[in-house]
Image 1 (cartoon, helix red, strand yellow):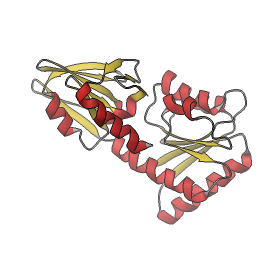
Image 2 (cartoon, rainbow, N blue to C red):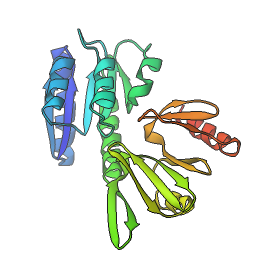
Image 3 (tube, helix red, strand yellow):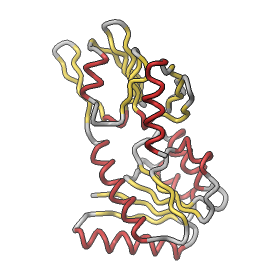
Image 4 (cartoon, one colour):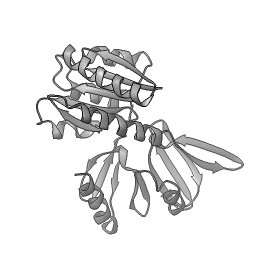
Length: 235
């Protein structure tokens, strides 16, 4: 089951997106559950009651709590970095404001059905990838943590400090071995001591990066070009 929310104070837009997704899911025999919200406050209230979604189509120009603030509440207050957010707006001047929300995409109005579907397919692929786990050993015990929850790894001599959205843990390994095991995901070694989950990088600078937990990590001279190349590939 794929859980999707549509949040827009324009009921016609909500109905349009809902019909596009229902038609596509029926044709592809995909199981989806749709929830519609007409305000940012009602969506956040739904989250506050322990619910979540795989994907949200979120209007920016909502009254009172706008879509930018809703996204920040989901990321910063609720610490939810798994839900994919697709912003919808008739105004394309929100690039800088949306950066720390890490949206999947931005859809301009009027709505184009093919773009709605492409974002749905991309979110589905990413959700499947984010459901994967990283496994590590401590003594005779094996632990696992969702890839999406890992913010970064830090090498401390022979020990690895793993920082996640729920805290941190330490175990014995080599950063090179960890980098190899998570190579299919968006992890990047920015320094001989740091391997970061790029999905948790919220501020990108020339010589440092700020992660979703507020940690500022250095980018070594040798790694700056690789980091810059990754940024360019996303532009």
